[in-house]
Image (cartoon, rainbow, N blue to C red; front, side, top):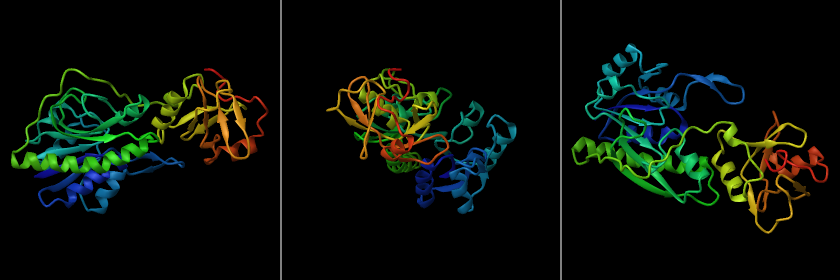
Amino acid sequence: MRLLFAGTPEVAIPSLAALLESPEHDVVGVLTRPDAPAGRGRRVEPTPVKQRAVAEGLPVLTPATLRAPEAEAAVSELAPDCVAVVAYGALIPAALLSVPRHGWVNLHFSLLPAWRGAAPVQHAVLHGDEITGATTFRITEGLDEGPVFGTLTEAIRPRDTSGDLLERLAVAGAGLLLATLDGLADGSLVAVPQPADGVSRAPRLTVEDGHVRWGHPAPAVDRRIRACTPAPGAWTGAPDGSRLKLGPVLPRPEVTDLAPGEVRADRREVLVGTGTHAVRLGQVAGAGKRAMEAADWARGARLPEGARLGGGAT
């Protein structure tokens, strides 16, 4: 089939690579988001998908909005049989959905209808799911509501961050997307409507979602930090009033004598109390500084005895 690939971040690259390597399909172009500021220096850079597409010599479309007539014309001119979508990052208007004869097929990183939305992996980790997966489905006007072609499952490991889990799903999902497109091409695959039960929503996590409340139980603190790693990032208030970024923590259920947010530091580790038991801090980063081991940070910060993070039980 003639394919247009729509994707933006790094997690879309395994799928693009799989389609480029497939002898059954011809990727005739790439649709991605416009260049945008990225990294610590906030320099304007092309998306990871655009960078890969340019390296492959593919035509690249970067419309600011797909609702513009010129965007529809550009997609139509490529005459794709299908548009394969992985984390493109914008809604597809109804006028464009009918352009390819096989529609727009999305690879979504959850087991639909669970976790419809922009951050399915983060919400699966945040809410303590043990199993997640990926789904291919035909895009319709409703958000992630279209009929399903195929699924795969993936266990969420106890120490997974959302970044760890998404990396695995991106690789496994590339095979699922390729198999789906193969089935569409030979007519062996039929989409099945999603069940009405089991719907949950996964809106994009904000910076405030990364704010750790030390009065919450330790498992909830642990999941929030892992869910927000690497983005949008977990954080807390430092004793000096600045913001302290937090990497994943290690639960210490044997330590129960610290109040929520109370810090106990020595040369080897930094423990912080929660609503249940303590957690051991991993890497942390002060405002404008690089990440370091928590024990190194604590030595430099010269924390007084009884110091607290985040103002205690907030």
